[in-house]
Image (cartoon, rainbow, N blue to C red):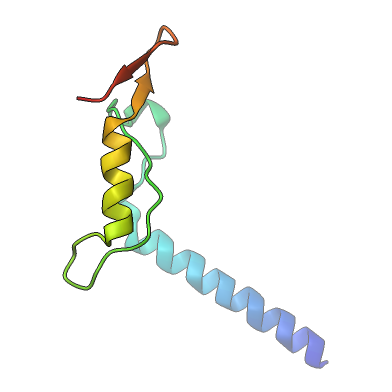
Length: 82
């Protein structure tokens, strides 16, 4: 009986978390891929943002390195990001 209660509790929490995320990101998600704007983007995994909104020194270094890194073109060549 305790196991059933634990399972139900976990499922309810997951349902609440999913609903919350859905509501909070409602206007920020694309459901149809063809509507996503075509932009050049890069994902830089970092080390955090300080309370004042500035990147940590490690994240700052990673962003700087990413900007300097060559990027692939549609022809398979690499070009530096300007």
